[in-house]
Amino acid sequence: MKRLLLSATAFSLVLVASPSLAEDFEFTVPVQLSKLDPAFAQGKVTCDVRGHSTMGTGAGGRTVIGSGEATFPITQGAYNGNVVVKFNAKRPEFQPAQGETYACMLHLLGAGGVDGLLCRVDPVMGVTPGPIPEWLKLDGKNLKGCVSGNLPH
Image 1 (cartoon, helix red, strand yellow):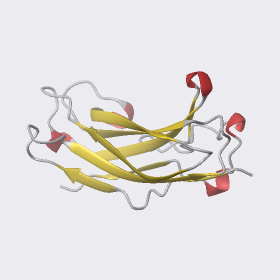
Image 2: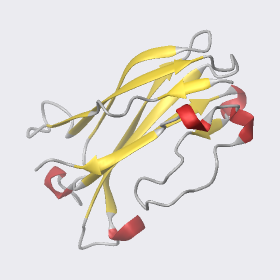
Image 3: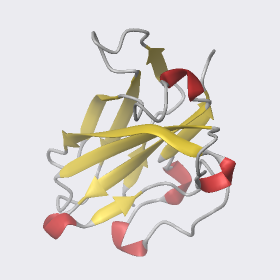
Image 4: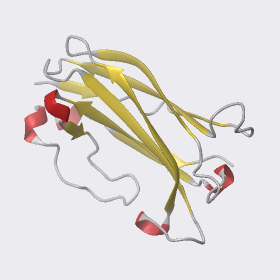
């Protein structure tokens, strides 16, 4: 069986006060992948920050304050390292202080742009979107492909 592990327990979050010096949000995501099908040559981590808004709301009564992604190479079916995702709030509509929750998800990218989202529970809605697609050939018992939580204030 193929094995995959996203070690999401060690997430670190840095909120930066000065947007002119750095991004508003920075997530360092430790990723450990091994024994993957060689068809997967790249991975991606996507993160978003959500909060309440007086404007139209998104899923769960929250709107996306900002989002970003970062890709990483998968070599010989493996990757072991940190993936850093940085992004700003969508100004002028939103400010970083409006962010209340975050969610980060792991994707495996295959030939032809095939995107395998490895999140068994939607971190925003808290519902199961369905099983891991069979074509990914992964052992769901050893899989943690998403993480979410509250932002410190």
